[in-house]
Picture 1 (cartoon, rainbow, N blue to C red):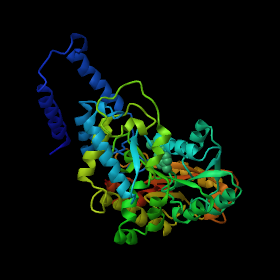
Picture 2 (picture 1 turned 90 degrees about the vertical axis):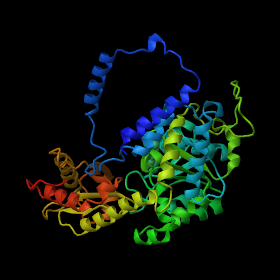
Picture 3 (picture 1 turned 90 degrees about the horizontal axis):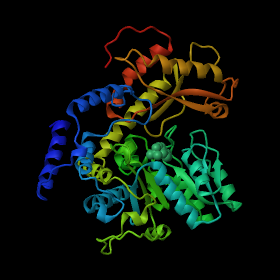
Picture 4 (picture 1 turned 60 degrees about the vertical axis):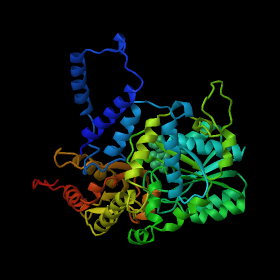
Length: 469
Ligand SMILES: *Cc1c(COP(=O)(O)O)cnc(C)c1O
């Protein structure tokens, strides 16, 4: 069955349900002119063509891909009702689905107890985690690495908390010695760790940070917005071995205080789906508030609105995730198969890059994000030559459309690049390099072709062979 049929089935079922309440005439003011609609739709479709082909295997630039058709169907089915997951009255069915979906996420991280909910994004999910961190360690700073998502600095500013950036090592992981020194001086209450940084996909040593939690009473928040679903691979012994994933940091998440994961990144969902999970359900007290609007269906059940900073939220997002999890459970043979492909692709591409004389691997990938740069024909490499060669490759790879490879550019500092590649002339403070995210299994299985084409382009060859998918 195709998506169009699934969607019409969802519309049909909604119509059947609506019929039970008796029919009525929609008001005249809401009627539309069919010809006008037709024209407007044509215009919309035309305007939507102004997009990069996120769906295509050769789009490997940013963390973008369309949702799975199953998620679209789940979203549409619920959107026709438009439940609001703020309160139970707003949508009992989708509120229950949200509870079940969040339970599945908590299970994936190996949590024994939890309190969590969906959010509209990773940003809001992290804001909530940092808000609770501020409430439980008042007056103390929040530290995060220079590789952490920039949202942490911004959210600290928003919360009126001091945010302290820490250096990272040559794999892009937080420098725990610096964290320890800072904690010893008593300045910080919370340490933010990242499981899969947005830039490099680096995984902080969450396992090693646990000692700091015990020694200094630090609160530890894990930002796994991007990487979270890789927990599935890490928790499967055979897969972790095959895919060279160290399970230790992932297993340690269960001993932290909060974790954030974005189903709208690696969970096959449309935008509008993040999640924050707290390991101690008692943090609900920080959300306590009085609402003048009466809830008429509370019966000892916690309203999602009582444990969330956001008020109105799409119940459809919960339905979409719930339906997706029915078909792609958070196990090695469910969603794990999708993620394993990306990781396998990253490993084999890293190997090709390590053996290439035209492209150099910036650092070993820990997840499915690759970073590399052109090395040219034997001339001495400098920050500025890497920068311009990367920009050229990025541009030239984007045409012609039927063979285009969409990459992204990533800025690195001279000290960061110098630590990984000695001998590069430091004639500029920064350089752009190439970054590629293998989020789609179809991309991951064609890395050989992608690599060949990029090598040709990097050599400056005018490649007219064509025929690549
Ligand atoms: C994407 C991302 C965020 C921000 O999440 P949004 O859903 O884009 O708001 C935060 N942290 C990390 C590590 C991310 O990858």
